[in-house]
Image (cartoon, rainbow, N blue to C red; front, side):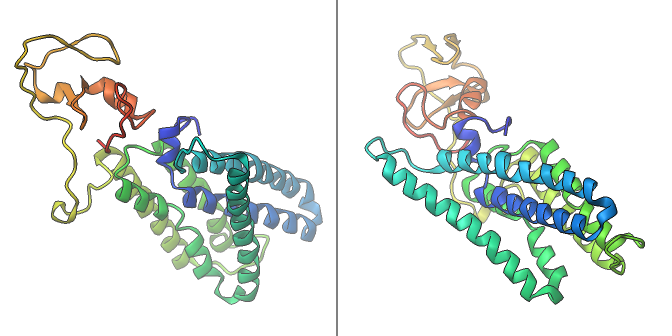
Length: 277
């Protein structure tokens, strides 16, 4: 949340990915409460874990969902509170509908628990697809990707991998290896997108044409051009990688505009929307 605390940063995060993790934490809260009731000697430990899961899901993740929703919806100065309240009601009703529907689905299909868990642990895929479609730059922090991958896979590895687990489920080493590899591949793709670009693994032939910010500008007036972000002169005689030209023909230092685009995807001079860099 701190990494994407701006409107532009929150808009890069997939709301489906965060919603899927929030639903997982809600299920884990119920699971810990149920386990605490069934195993009375461990009730305090399980109830404490369930409380923290409830705080994570009901406060932090729901707040993050709201921030992403607000950042990704189009701004309309003329709309009233009634329209926004209606859209929020639809968002929350969908979330809790999926939450309750998932509980009923797992109850009816409890014999297919492993495939359902495999589907649930594909929560990085919506972010990977969002990165490719929007060509976003570094939407998630690498520590968050690695940390969430490692910690979320711990519970299924205990349940299906530990020979003496309290749920008395027979170990399934092949399934444990499969889910670990599946999560590892998703995390690896996200890290590749972070360091090499969101479309690094897609052939260039099938990618749409991308706007080039680093294009040569002929200075016919010989007048100095100032970057409106740092208020210093831009030397157009340097390499094109030192400055960036927006579609509206306004020129900025490369580092200045990239930092600006992490906050707002609009031109600092004329407020025109900017394409991804």
